[in-house]
Length: 388
Image 1 (cartoon, rainbow, N blue to C red):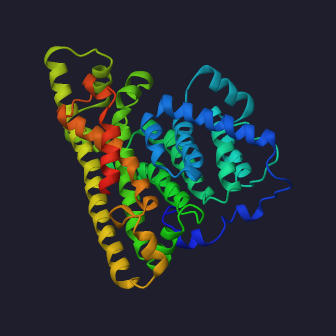
Image 2: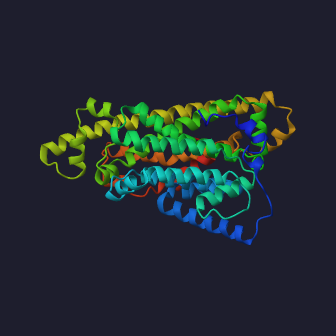
Image 3: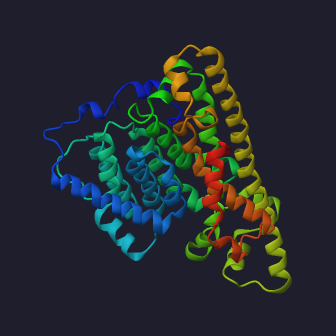
């Protein structure tokens, strides 16, 4: 997978794209103002559409925070793209030969190419791109391939899965890997920039086997997030787009059709029909949520092993490495911040799954939509204890 790269090797050198930067002049006032505006715009975007990321941003080291916010906003922008079958879209396709969907993805593909050129030239005029390019200029580790994989996964979903539906949970998890695991990989790579945490880079250079667990934890958490996100958006897709993203095999298992679900979400079922469909839906949601929880449990197990491996490296293999030993004294529970913080993106998923269980997997329960005050406490608690 694109995300499963050798982080320590990447951290030893400048990003391959950044090598081709053309710094014709230092950043001028216009450039600095464009970055400040982009920072404000991305902060407001997260505050409005992704409160969890807005809060978790405070755990990102300040030199990488702008870039991390841009990554999260990139996800928001990509997930907002939809394939609408409107008259305007049909007319556009008839006139131009391609649909608006293709144009939107082409826009982001070309914008990414400009981002990874780096430099302080003409402003890009888009806040996400502006902050990403600023990260490149600051020699932070970013991989265009991971951004492209997110675009590819989303485009495939819109052109295929959104029309035909997920066949099974494997397809849902694959979508989560293509979107949310890639986001985790991007965060890992970003925080392993040499100028962010040289000690963590040194740790992985001296013990490269640690990255196996690192990437696997990120992969499982990303898949869990993808599954949970599908459940969170279920009612919205059903009521606004007449689309049911639940896996077809699980719906068949519980004798539930898409037509029944659409009638349920639109309020057309009553009496015994409503009770029966609601019960069947809860059973499907339970099976889906169980898969997400299984990925979290697996990630937790692998992270526990990772912590043991780090202790082994510090106490035995690198006991005489003065640089590592001195820096490790500042690591909470002997785990560097930059290795743990990328996993915090799963905390909102865990809270949602717990709430879903509390309300007996009733996806229509209004309490599921309420703001979760526990996130601030849970994030600090997990961060302090280095737990998933």
